[in-house]
Length: 268
Image (tube, rainbow, N blue to C red; front, side, top):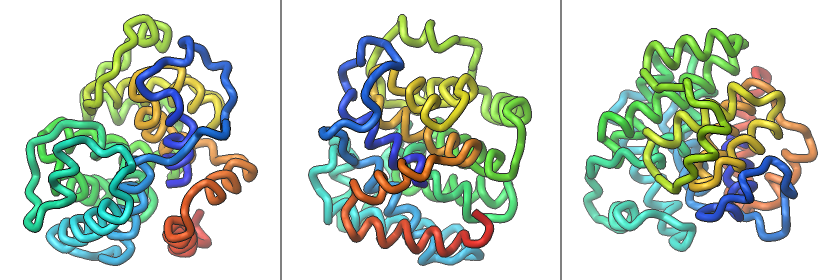
């Protein structure tokens, strides 16, 4: 969860404008800030903790809707897509067939909170389906949560790669350099997941993974949020970055992070 939020913050200042397709940039400048990715990550985490570990799928979906609308309305100018804004404002929100990468950028807490991979994927589906019910939107959320879970459980990169390619079918044959050369700004799971996964698999540390993701340009905050979520679980995060994360978000979000840490202790 910290990994996703930090990825969002670090990538935020480069969105829509690639940083020269380079990994060499100031990691946390003054103008780095949280966006809708952070707001919805916090919202989903709170919903899952409110619902409880053994909640039925319907209860999880209802909790996600309540929490996402609450946080989205509290922070209405965080950079949501136009259709999602309508969903946040609706008195009767319904899924709208989206395959946008929003389902994947908000799901990181799922990978930490459940005992089995099967339950992790079931809950990830539930968090996606409330808005992003297109098969690709659901797949992006499941894949991200599964990769976080496997990383947190100590799986090797080869094991994670084998699982995500076998189960979700993403083509990861393209190199980071090839991805940089075809620079574009797309906000779909089909574009974001291969980029985030390749950034992770080629990375040597949490920071290196984030630099990989941001160097691709385009939707940098979300690609870095997804890659960062997986990288946190695999590599961990330096303490100074955890401090930066807490310092750069509002107090109400810090309270959710604190509650999340307490829920994981002593397993984290």
